[in-house]
Image 1 (cartoon, rainbow, N blue to C red):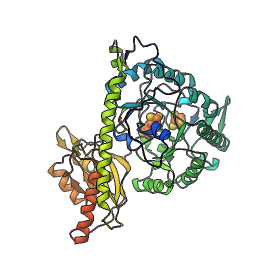
Image 2 (image 1 turned 135 degrees about the horizontal axis):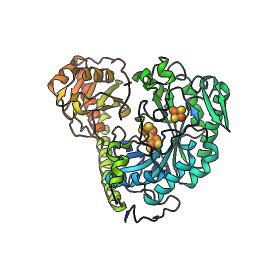
Image 3 (image 1 turned 90 degrees about the horizontal axis):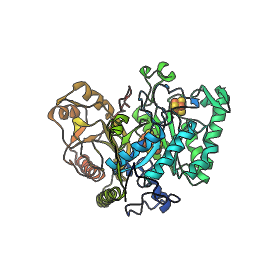
Image 4 (image 1 turned 135 degrees about the vertical axis):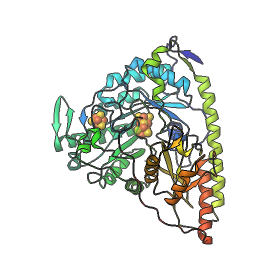
Length: 499
Ligand code: CLF
Ligand code: SF4
């Protein structure tokens, strides 16, 4: 089926049946098929999917109904975005045009999210008009929204009617005493509420909204911002509260806080967590609850794979230059079938490597940093990496546990020593860094810092390679060639972000 923005009159999806079902992967054994169908190509709801599938946001929701102490309204909603990021606001009509343009250029773009720049549900008319327009012109795209939850309970039936299958609520506390340190005020029922009263209303509305989403069969993800000294210990209680109300996934994100962002916390010196503090909390919450560790705190007009940002290719100015945009659903499906085949090949390679792990006995765990452009492969040069993905490897397997943003090492063909220092600080807790290619200088400096630079697995699958490296590592430790030493902590990048 081919259609254009100009000729499109609605191609009909009944009851969500127009959603993509390309691919044949049956999904994990512990997941019901109908849930797998919803998450298998959603890059935020499935860690595995985020190596292959992209999302896009449209910034159609400017207003907000609460104030968070980590937010400066000059920038995007910090419940999903890194501070200091400003998105280009769109009307619902412009948003629909942008979705078509992106979908026709990036066939693996499977999810459209509304995440600001304010709160999606504080702008219900704009948010739902956007969803309506998009479901008519691009029926295979999953719809997603993110909210602070204050306006959520009454809007759950609308969310259901518009076939929005994925909703994120940012829940930072379930105790108003903690909440009053995070939220100075909310605007509710035509009145401004402050302090503990405000926090009490907010937590009640958020939990009620979550229960209603669960009963409506909508997958709910919870975002929580980890604020050391304020809610870090309390987030374990939050995790229990949301788990018991049916949340599908919990995403604990680091507070990013600098005076230059002009937020209350930034101006008052509130620090964010270190990499190991964040990981320890995520580990403590992980039981039978799925923890999301691959969130990139996207901007409200983000486009592309998580971790890449192609929003500059789709500015309003560029969109307006195009007279006709072709939406080729069949081509999108064909491309996504190729992605599914690659994905299954990757899983088979990992399982083969795991089968060989059965003979390894060791309680060692190591972290490995990986330079990747996507596809689950080690396919990025060290000097071009804007982030490293972090895997924890043990005899239990290779598990994605986070990512670290870094400043580019290679600027205009030359390595920047200053950039290298920040990279080393960002991956200081890792035993090795996997890259497609690396120059002699950074190699020596990484080795001096105790991090093994590895280009032997260039362009191979990440997990398979991490398992192979681990087996070799354990053998070298056993033979006395290497001494296994615990690594230190690492820093989460602060400062303003362009993307
Ligand atoms: Fe966007 Fe959010 Fe939907 Fe994803 S983002 S509305 S659930 S489509 Fe994803 Fe970005 Fe993290 Fe959000 S990585 S900030 S969790
Ligand atoms: Fe800012 Fe988002 Fe909080 Fe509103 S909900 S104050 S936009 S961080």
